[in-house]
Image: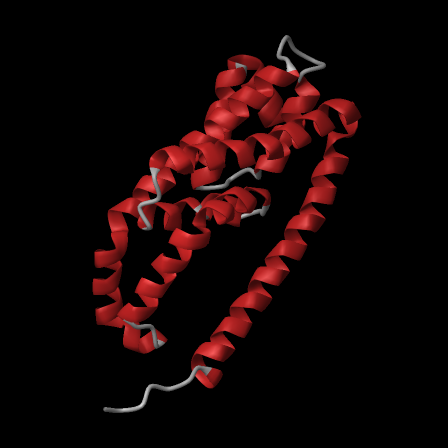
Length: 206
């Protein structure tokens, strides 16, 4: 079913279909990028499309989606986030100082985070939001996002092209990888909540 849908839309619209599918996947992932990329690689043997063309199209779509999420994050910004924290932060034990610290952390480590998170399922899209919130320079954001995305796309498109009709095997392996990452994210979230509610040092009343 999925293969028939992708084959039909890619046969009909070619590279444009890959650009749109990947862009939409970055914003609201109805189809995982691993499926689109590996199938796109497979389709280079079935159509006039080339591996280079699929890589360029998928990278353009991914960067386009990332830029949209970046601007969504920039519309929040530090001050708006602080207003949200002032209103609701007591329920989560988050303060405006925590917001300042998080922005300072992202200013210091954000560039590496934006680059390396492009290799992590789910996070690879969402990382664009804090980048926008922290007002990371657009040129730096584009360079790091494009670099990380291009590496990810090059690997998966070439794998899809090399295994041909067995491209689904690559998707199955990536599903295992994604499930491991999701498990680690959930575990990290639970550890953070435990620290937040039980082990975080309480401020002394003045």
